[in-house]
Amino acid sequence: MDISKRQFLTGCGTLIAGFSIYSVAKELAESEAGVSVDQTQTIKYAMVHDENLCIGCNACEQACRQVNHVPDGVSRVVINRTGPFGEYPDQSYRFSRKSCQHCEDAPCVKVCPTGAAYIDQDTGIVGVNSDKCVGCQYCIAACPYQVRFINPETKTADKCDFCKETQLKQGKEPACVEACPTHALVFGNIRDPKSELVKTLKSKPTYRAKTDLGTRPKLFHVSTIDGEIVL
Image (tube, rainbow, N blue to C red):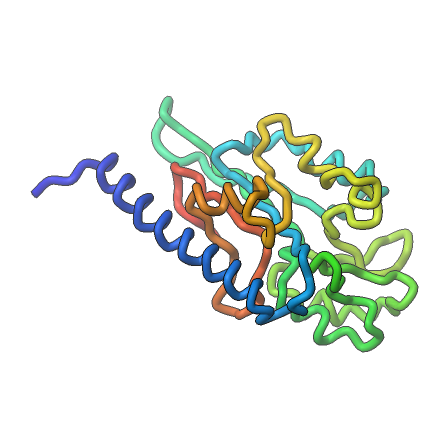
């Protein structure tokens, strides 16, 4: 029996969507049961990057740099481009986000000797207390996602914190989310079933990087239709 490429992709999409919804349901159930955080915690922030909507304009990276005063030469957010896929003129590129995953079981927090790397109990955000950081770089070595760096100005560890110390304090969304012209980023509380984040997770097939490590990352990706998933 011959199966067209479109039929094959549709079938795969349905299978992945089913697995994604199961994964999200499991995540929410575990959250409600207090598996990894205090049962009284009502907020646990997460983010979705839709690779089908992302155009690789880097507006997110520039907004992050400006709002969080990130020096040149380092970056909290990077959009990687792979491709082209297909044959000319039907070619496409894949744009994937590289930034802190805000893991629930964060290796960086486990190895930090001073407590500078921590998980905020009110939001679930993985943060860095620069006053406690001694620049030992243990966290950089431990991070399996390679998203941490030493800030050349502060000489301490740095990375994405969902704009916890800037935008969120003002009741705004992260700078990258506000700057995205195609609405490829969705940010919200994974514990709120009515949030746009949860609605997105339940309606689109998603994947997370290196879940086999047990880190339980909270950065979700909607895989691009063209090209293969590169983790």
